[in-house]
Length: 363
Image (cartoon, rainbow, N blue to C red):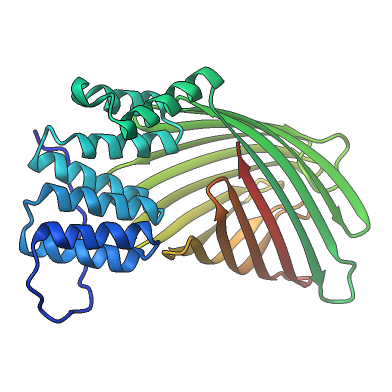
């Protein structure tokens, strides 16, 4: 049975002086480097083994552990599946896949992989500890997430600054998530408060989502809005998505359509592109696009860069906006992420520079 349709590419590492060592010693070296947080050294040590012995299932498992620790879940999953292609009964690979599913909120998937492990090993301390965590998550009902965001924007032409703050909370359980959020926006001396509820569900590997939002007598935000989203992972490297938003603003109805593709290049690097179409309040069709990239480093830092030239309705009416953004996010703890960003926009009437700060916490 073939598990991995697309085994991860093995990238070249800096050559080291030849040393007489066994594969077991090299794996020990990789394991120690991974535990010390030196993911580059760990990956290189494992990849040297795989390059000379591609049928070494233990090396593929160690590579999966390195990618998992550095945050590249797609590459980790591909490595574990490659190990199972070589050794279908390799329980460490199944445990790695169970942990990946658990971290993504797919508790059913985690239990399914755990059930494939040899029953004689279920009392091993490592597996027993994970099984207890999985049981506790099931009893507790899932994982909570809290997000907070704040932004300040300076405008050209002597215009008053914009301010924005939002708070949201969500709960994820067994492939489903539900959440709610509230946003406070100040623009041109006026303010809006907008609320939204969201529901998402993973069905046969595809994610479906719907969001309902609205505001009372808003100046800029929609009076009412419905957004439907869909995403699917075609393989370990590609994710495709689409969205449709129907919103009623004070100036009329505005519909927005989006198509998105994301490509993982390995090494924590991702690229994305999106096509955007808007049917504006005058019933005219406008189009645009967006391009982005993200690079996750081995120390938990993720850098992102994005460019877009597309219509938007943040002023309560549809205008064309060109924007360049840069962000940096850091996992300061397994359950805490901080992010800062800067955004430069060009509009017909004025330019805008936004500074933002965000916090995400799971519990």
